[in-house]
Image (cartoon, rainbow, N blue to C red):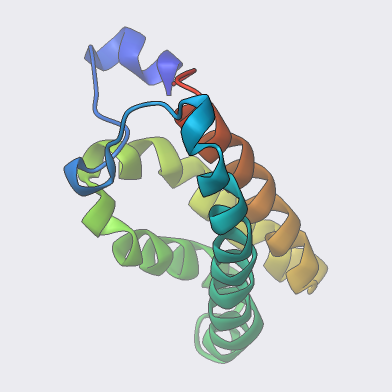
Length: 128
């Protein structure tokens, strides 16, 4: 994200409806609330997108499924704003490609959770 800002200038990486001040110690309890949401969100998206849709799209698009699938997943995330979509685009395509090639949805779960979890924590603690 910071690398893209060098080229484009300052960008909003969060949609306005998701902005919040960094957590203070008296609000750390929100992390406990967030944890099950994080697990359910990641698993839900991965089961739907990589576990169900990707194999069905593969019947139509063949070896290029990862490209169409990644773009569709990007459209699903368009509500978060074009700036975030620009930063996510490489990951949307790489993740779809790797999951299609390896035929293993768990790879998508690990990638998705490994990016979303630390990113949320960095935002929550004011690092981003």
